Image (cartoon, rainbow, N blue to C red; front, side, top):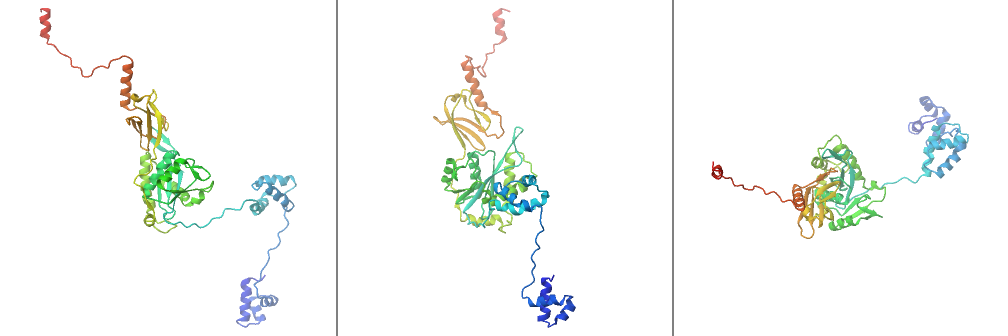
Amino acid sequence: MLEVERWAEVRRMSRVEGLSQREISKRTGLHRNTISRALSSDAPPSYTPRPKPASKLDPYREEIEALLGENPTLSGVRILEEIRALGYSGGKTILNDHLADIRPRFQPPPRTYQRTTYRPGELAQIDLMELKEPVPVGYGQMRKGYLLNLELPFSKKLTSELIFSKHFEDIAFAISSCLTQLGALPKKLVLDREGALHKGAGRPTDPFAAYLGQLILGWIILGPGDAEAKGALERNHAFIHGNFEAGRHFAGPNDLRHRLDLWLVKANSRKHRTTKRIVDEHFAEEKASMRPLPKLLPDTAHRQVIRVPAQPYFRFDRNDYSLDPRMVGRRVEIRATQSQITATELDTGRRACRHERVFAGGLTFTDPAHQAALEQMRGGRLGRRPRPKNTEVQIRSLDRYDQLIGA
């Protein structure tokens, strides 16, 4: 068998060096007939592969294709059982090799990808990422935490915020926090079909639409199973898990937020492997094409109106908080932010309570002033008069008693 390299060498020796076929045969050891064929052919030698030998699987190929036509995902084990019943005596390896060749013909075409180019300030991708380890929230309790991450795909600027639920108000707070860290507004947000933000058919929920409308932000809600369309942020999830969360233990939410802020400074000051530029420097150029933040961001507090019950407590996020008992029967508005919970009487604007928000659960919080007012009201209903405090008692001289008894 004459190799292509030897064919080229023979032609060079004959046409360039002017050697005879006999001399070429002496130097190369090739037969003169082989040399003659090489010199007469202008194309390099090519060899077709030998036909495959007959296989024990050959009589069952049509049956295998029929099975895959009915169910393209049918496992090799099941196919082997079916053709064994028909008399197949071969092994599983040759079946698996055959299935690897023909199964793609019966499956939907694989997804293809295009190269995407982003314009500065156009898009911001947002997504929720569940932390792998629960976060200490006080009172000996741990709670599942989420990071809402926002990334600008043009400059790769990354911001993040910690929350403890997927309610709209908490997600909206996290988005506002991330936008505040940017200090500017993109044109559109790109997001998955998160339940609190998407009501179906690629449309935002009414609260989310109102939030976007206040900020004059557009939106792109991706189709089902299309998380890869925001692949830049999906890759950062693995980066955050491995580079920030892994190997760290947090004392509580405030500790996690503080250390997350420090880590983001470090992450945004690195040279990105895709853009080959320092992220913060690249973002400074992109920010020039973005809109400034409004003076006031939309209110993202939880709100609800209740009538103060006879037992003056209300439940929020698994905890019970006290209300002023003097407002029993009156309507108050509850407002809960990430740090505190307040209640205001609707008619008069008087404050009905103010509590620090606690992310642990199953607890009851009573304001001492509310407890004192409750005890005073209960005492009045039971006909008890409150004992006067700091009452002055007249003290008589003992000589006065001696005069009265004639001692």
